Length: 462
Ligand code: TYD
Ligand code: MG
Image 1 (cartoon, rainbow, N blue to C red):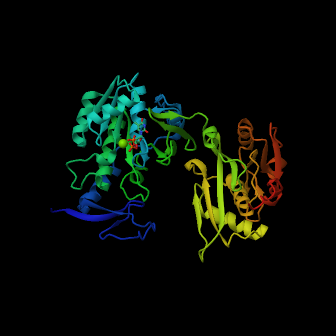
Image 2 (image 1 turned 30 degrees about the vertical axis):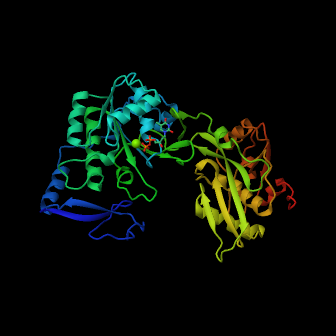
């Protein structure tokens, strides 16, 4: 067709190339190029359009004259989700819910449609499931469906007409990758289709004051066009994380124009859909191995909430010329750094061993405050001396092996005490500045070396 051209677009950084490439020359991502068909722009016309956009009648406003906006929020009824959203769905805003297929996005949205339906009109647009399948799922979840309208349509023009006739307060689009426009040449799910149809929903949300939730699928390699592309266009981006084999799920805000991005929401997948988990630490600690070398409990802050998790390490002699290092839940480079510090400062020989590090429950610990626990778990596994079960470790590891101060120590030790821990390894530098009261024995350490006396004596080989 005249005016149409095939291009390859990097799904990470949007770099366009006329040829497919294995590695993006701009952002360095591998396998990130997806095919797309675009209409060739008439350059002079585009330039004119850009100019006319600039010559609109908008005038600058003095900052003092700006009015405070009043956001109208609707609680979704699931407090774990509301916590991540910053208090509920904002009218006229667009939220992107991204996650891998099968993680539970449709389940969550069907559940909140039911709760929202008690005081709002909800339109659930599904391009993936038939009405029968939706009904089956709803039955299983015990959804009553008051004020809930279901539309199985993927053509954006028809969807917009239907929104006008239903006049909903909340629109759920499951998923944005299935929606397409007849006026765009590329196939559904292609970059242009996803961007243009998402824009149509965003405009609708702003003009009609509707809350829109867009579902976006991601895969591990990030090669599906979608969430990355839309992140800058929407008001909030929530990622639904978790291991499909395990039952619990975490919702994390990556971006939120109406709230904090630090909060997470924790859910458990049950036979009757997702259930909120108000005390995630208890769940994360359930069934932890006792008196086993290589384990250490840690307390991380997720927003305002302290969360106790368990770091596990396995250090075993290697059969490879270059020993293996595998890390789940803690950044790989962070693991390498901790190993280097322990090797150099404590003279421990990790270089002759394979090292595996894992955070129980598929949780991701991004905070440096978890370094001490990782270091103790590693030392414990290497030396076969277990960290006692009543000990929890909190602190950041510096390059000289020193234990650096962390934020929110009071909240962390309080949560540890609540869950029955009796001793907490904490940074001496925290207590030096401001002593804290706690119902738990505080073992203030200046370096990782100071914590080693807590380890149990080495177990006799059997
Ligand atoms: P789904 O919401 O369809 O995932 P997504 O929309 O993100 O692709 O959830 C799929 C999985 O959830 C499926 O493998 C079955 C499981 N599930 C339950 O365990 N319990 C339930 O009540 C429901 C509805 C689903
Ligand atoms: Mg789904």
